[in-house]
Image (cartoon, rainbow, N blue to C red; front, side, top):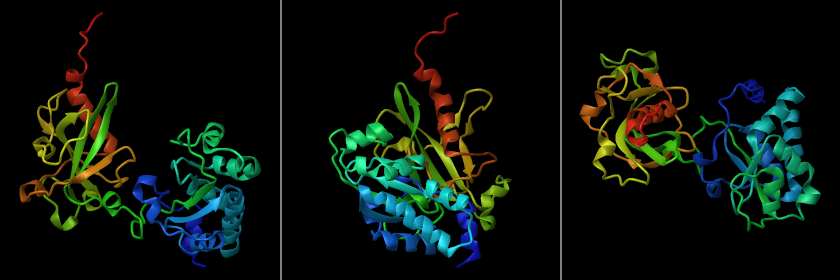
Length: 300
């Protein structure tokens, strides 16, 4: 087997996908043996098997032994790979559990098989499990490598944002407020502009915060989604809120894709001397609008 894949299982990878990166129903389903072999031969890809609760223990053992058989990797790395990349997911309520929780649900399969998902959620802290869920089966999902965007069921519009992609982003929880950001363009050394002084333009995304803020979901026809936010707080003096995002080009799981508003030739000339993250964009929007949001007068 490939030396590079041995290194992948030792942790030299980009981390697993998140659930909003793919449509679970669209991911091909395998038997336990087929799942283990697919994981061993292509660990970067999201893989899945639909199994009964009592089979989860077999999933872990089969995946573990197959990786050990195919690669010269220490037990620690094999177990760590399974902890990070294996998830048990309820097909009805989409409650999920991984890491030590996967081992617990696998190890307690005899008791769990007789319990409802609502009890499983209470005992094992399944995320988003519905109280009336009574599924006796689980998806065993291998979460792959988050840079692997091709394949059936993958949401390429989120994993590989197009120019003009607009994302709804949470900026405050009380009251619940949202802002929006828009991808301007992908960095390209051959298209560097005079105001693009950062080396990350070669690999990053140029993303702009917009002037839209609200409590609901805006329509793509909303004009404010095309207007770049000008920061007037602090000493920014009207600077445009545009950042290069490099470290994680995938929008976070709590950002929602609204659609695409094509960028103009004029917008493609925009650049930035700032680098940051998706969340730093959200924070700048909050700081800009905070004086409007906070209505209580200052008191000593």
